[in-house]
Image (cartoon, rainbow, N blue to C red; front, side):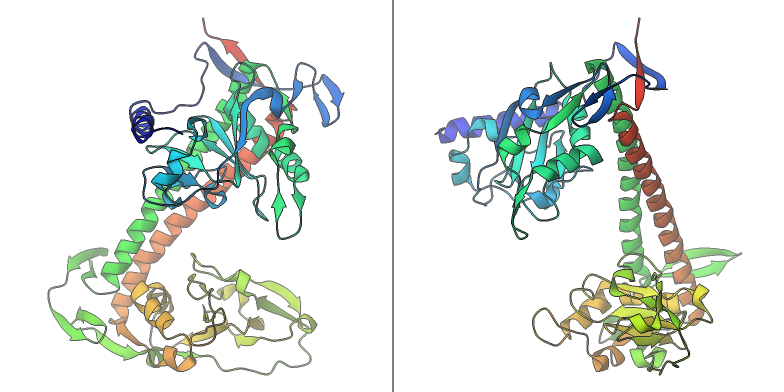
Length: 473
């Protein structure tokens, strides 16, 4: 058992290394990637055709350390404990992870602190078993709980980043999943099972090349993620300013201009500009009434709860035979669908029915309110219902048993909401919709990059296409 002084010195050492020596992926500066080529010479193996120069090795032969983490006690130390919920191939979510208790650290061997280039494999959990993460380093010391297996690779045999990409590829993940055993409620991937997983091993230079190509795409994805995060934070700040009237917007010479409001009135929901009104929700929107569907209708556009977004404007739909729809609420294109049941309401599920459904019969799950707007810009009302001040008020009025709480109709209808002049409503929605469009474009770019990465992994990690590497003179 290490002494308290030894433990503090070790933690201080890890922190110093993390702060002064940023982790970079393994590089081979004497090499460069000059292109790709299609492989034509293969050998037959138990896991399929692979290039003749490649080998198959078991994880136990490429690793120096394969251990499950310890069962931690949580507390307020500086050491971060990564759990399965934070372990993802794209990024380990350190900010969501709990801290270890000092008493737990006194019993924790030093080898259980994560080192840069460690591979983390989720070893329990329905739906996440076999999920692989890569530890590049962090500004605090880290360890893992007992549901994650740590893998430390012999770098003279294989590059950790290459092994990580292989294990997180379709082929590698499928093999990991196939090794798991247990009941439906508790699937487990044991250390011995992980140790027996076969890994494709190209020459070291080629491993570097493959990892470099995939890391380049990952860096592009991270860059887009950073922009999305920035835009979402900006949108949140704009909503807070524009939907309360603290910052106003007007048109000057065909351009939208922001200005700070100085004259307010006190209301039951806080200060709002003097020229704004405070109205009941039922004055600007109504819950659409039901309608009997004719027996002659054979097909309808149906919107399930899964098709209602939590972070975008429009609901999706699927065409269904009327015979498949047992219960529903009637709605029309342009309606706002507001989820009324927990946890969908708290998760922000709401969406506008696309205008492309004009002329079709549209039905939705009974767990939404279809809202028909009147005397209000529907997009302004959409953003108002997303605003935390309004949504939290409705959440506080939900009724029902735990797990089945709903927003009462009368609570929604009697809800007090700010009501700017209609021209200002439209200016506010123009700004927020432009933000949403920018976020959507970034998300589309991210999806394209992810598809590119999946395609490259399928080609490069199976050897069907090879990376051409040359030495730099």
